[in-house]
Amino acid sequence: MAAVVWIQAAGERPLWAVAVYAACSFICHQIPERSFHTAGVQWPVCARCAGLYLSAPVGALLAVWSLQRRSIPPSAASAIRLVAVAAVPTAATLALEWAGLAAPSNMTRALAALPLGAAITFVMVRAAAGSRKAIE
Image (cartoon, rainbow, N blue to C red):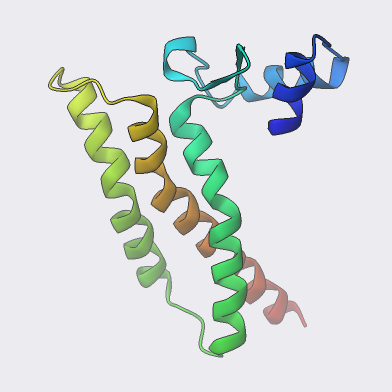
């Protein structure tokens, strides 16, 4: 994500950078007012999506660490609970926004999405590791 912003901030617009923005448009609304900008260049995803994606490596690292510490995989129910609890901050900002009670800043949107991005990635990495073990 950073590379595409930096290359455009340098005044270049290579095909791969255009492709990143086009691909991101399928998963994100890309509203300029709800997106971060660096050096005058809008990020390819909104602030909330940026929070999700920026926290994903943390979730992956925690999952790998937990796999090394524990041999018993978490149940599907505990994975669902983890994601549900992690979704609360994002759901709260969305509810307040949609109800017209508050207009969260981009930083608030991104910070609220951090737990959810990490939790989803944690569950996905753990599930992938469990699937791999089942195949072996």
